[in-house]
Amino acid sequence: MTEYDPKTGQAIAITPIVRRITAPNPSPMTYHGTNTYIIGAADGDIAIVDPGPDHDDHLQAILTATDGPDRISHIFVTHAHLDHSPLARRLSQISGAPIYAFGPAKAGQSATMQALETAGYRGGGEGIDQAFVPDITLTDQQIIGAKGWTIHAHHTPGHMANHMCFQLDDMVFSGDHIMGWATSMVSPPDGDLTQFLASCAKLQSHTWSLMLPGHGDVIRSPNARIDELITHRKSREAQIIAALETAPATAWELANQIYHDVDPKLLGAASRNVLSHCISLSERGTVQYDNPLNADSIFRISTN
Image (tube, rainbow, N blue to C red; front, top):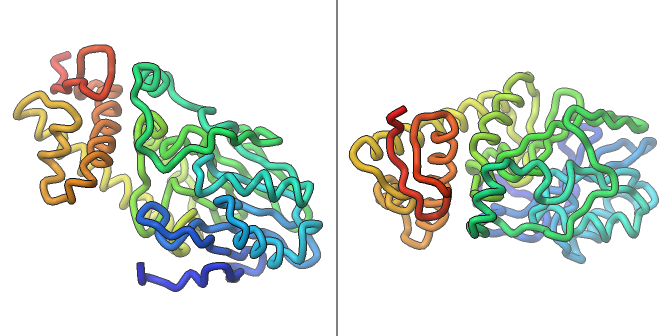
């Protein structure tokens, strides 16, 4: 965690109308902390992207950087994880600005993930903000205009069902979908790899100048980074297919084979990642399993 200095709690200028404040919540899951972005010039409307965790010091840092609550006109939330959305409600109450997002945490969840959750497979992610409800529900490709800027909303499920990326000119606030310091966690049933890959392809159809992620530094070659992540996922798929060509296995067994050099404490997360790949491969007809889908499902190369 020495790649760059986030200057936690300070408003750092990224462009003439975008600043970043990193929240004081560093961890293995959040890197240096959650990035909150401030959009707007001195004579225009101010928008906040991802207010972050419910932390008093971070709230004060946002208010100080925006010259008080009266300047804030819009609050955008990429997704309802506890390190991104909880402070939105307090900030909204103080400023009067409405909260914009795709919907509550489960909005956009695929039928496959709904069935997996119904079967009792839950948890394992970064902590869901179950109370999160936006004031204004956004649709995919919706445009929100204000004095000094225009936001173009892109629904990008995968890391989480209600995940959105927000486009500002040729820049994109990518939340946890694309980051530079790590690959995004895709942990069923909150995350869905089929959706994730489709969202990557959707973002890759644009040419971006900058990507502003929810954690870590600015990504200055966004399209190349998306390519890297897609290649990484395909490589992991190839490992899973090779293992299943030897013998059928559960996600846990596959994780133990593939992640042979990982800390045993991380095998739980690794098995969830493998499960997400197995489900995605099954949806494309490459592998199969006996219904119902659950944590103990045995996956095998498809004979169809």
